[in-house]
Length: 301
Image (cartoon, rainbow, N blue to C red; front, side):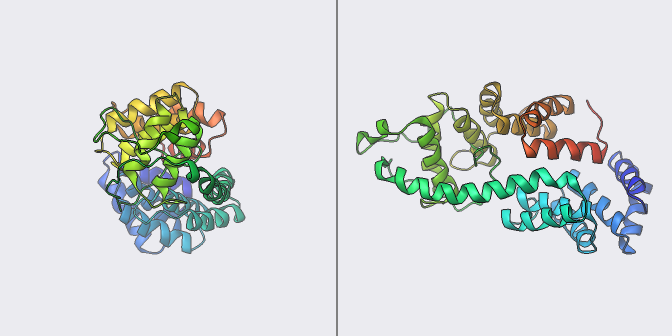
């Protein structure tokens, strides 16, 4: 089966053509790696991530470069598997090595993020010396998929669950950027014990000063329900504030919200609008989403 045939059958199956889905499944079960790949993409669009991973992995193991790229995406975003930047890096490298240049932006992005995480660990050790301690919160153990520009995607906050008292006024020594970084340290568990409530506390302080990255990170927290109740509408509220300031990660996240209909009416046209703006700023995730839309032939609406 050619990729053009697999793409057509996958698109027809998504449109409700049961015959096309049976044809794709039959070819995939016979071991056709192209069919396996497009069946995986079909299930991924349906958000049936375990089935998507099963078929995409089979195709990737057979050396299909597009499937290798898809497996990189799976591990980068944690869809159906535990999120792992290093495993994502492995699959992106294979895809690029076999000539799929569409994986190059994400390969570069993940390499930069891994390097930045190491740098952040060093930075938070310095920031911690002026860390004001809010009251101890319950540390969440839920795993997250950050989606962010300078490392995180987080939470729209409008209602504060518990007033955070300060034990000393040292927060005045921290800039909004440092407050955001400290929030990320708590959010990711890098340099601080993972604690989503404390992360949200610091994100709020930075967002109150108009820090676009913190606004984006607040959006992520609301999107995943980490440190706050899950609320897609509030996630969109914070994504939009940051996106309007030109933050590319927030623009990408806002595009995802429109594409999936999370907190807003589903609109592929709006999703493409925001992804295009982010891609023009070099955002690798936005470029990846634009490529996926083209590959899956999902029309605008």
